[in-house]
Image 1 (cartoon, one colour):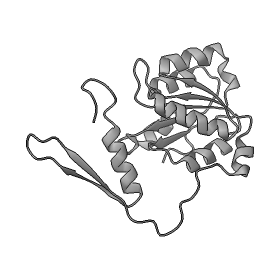
Image 2 (cartoon, rainbow, N blue to C red):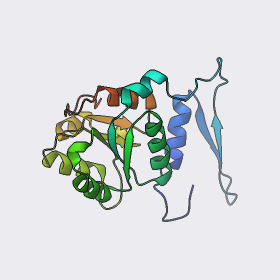
Image 3 (cartoon, rainbow, N blue to C red):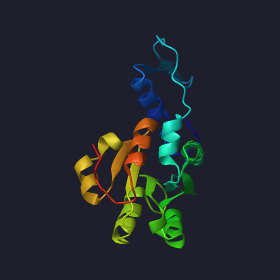
Image 4 (cartoon, rainbow, N blue to C red):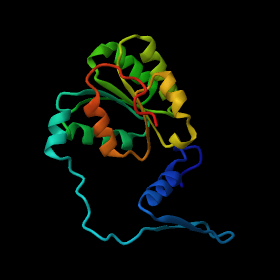
Length: 193
């Protein structure tokens, strides 16, 4: 699904997860020496699709939130940042945990309402970034995002101090509700299930 040594290797698991969430499946045909062909099967929609544009009440409820968004995938970072800006958030982006930590300190971490971080990144990962933020005693909620959520122990994530654990691909509605609930006070571990 990509060049050797490049990427995260998450492309196919993400496709499978999306297909399964839509009650579909992924198939594979791989004759010897002929490469691989993947098939994505999705059910026919019974109703009109729901628009992805944020509703006006949701946009108003997130207006003024300042977020630090961290992901090493530039496409994920760009799409998620744009969506959050459309909801009224002021978004600062970082491409890994070390970059995020440096920005957190330089921009006074207390000015952030929340940090949204990927789990697996080069240099400093999401768990280590969370630990640094918690040890700074600035009481900023941290939401951990990962395609590996099913493999993590929610209780361990909660005990580590994270506000929430969100599986990728993200349920944007759930993320919006979490951000609506955050009022600048650290309510760590409240939604790690």
